Image 1 (cartoon, rainbow, N blue to C red):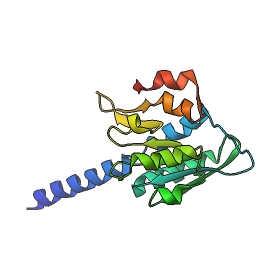
Image 2: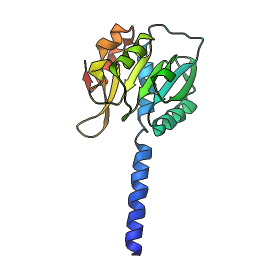
Image 3: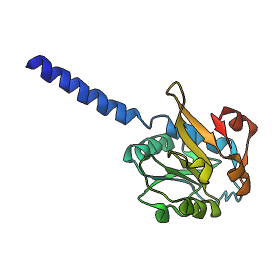
Image 4: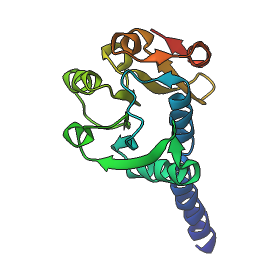
Length: 169
């Protein structure tokens, strides 16, 4: 009985650890995306706001990187947790995590405000998301880039970032 309890403890512990690590690399990607993308209307006198809609662990990891990096594009790096699109106005980047329900029209609304939309949802990049996180064939974190959507909304994506994309539209 003691062995079963020990095994169950480790299974629960490791699955919890895996969930906690799930969003470890997303903020690093997002921070680096900001270095290789030029915004249409850069407002250097305001905070650089990244809003996270969805999973709390994604928000926590984003806050951790903001505390380490402090600035993006010489602006204070601020992270907000939002429960829906309406709370994400005036953001430079909105990251929408897996499991969040969103309509293509809502993505269009964000795009119209000069917000870079980064998602982690199936088949959404073709519907207007600028960048979408995916798992590569070898189960690593990759991303799809909708360069047409970026261009249409005034973003300038560096060629170096486009070459790193797993898939480009």
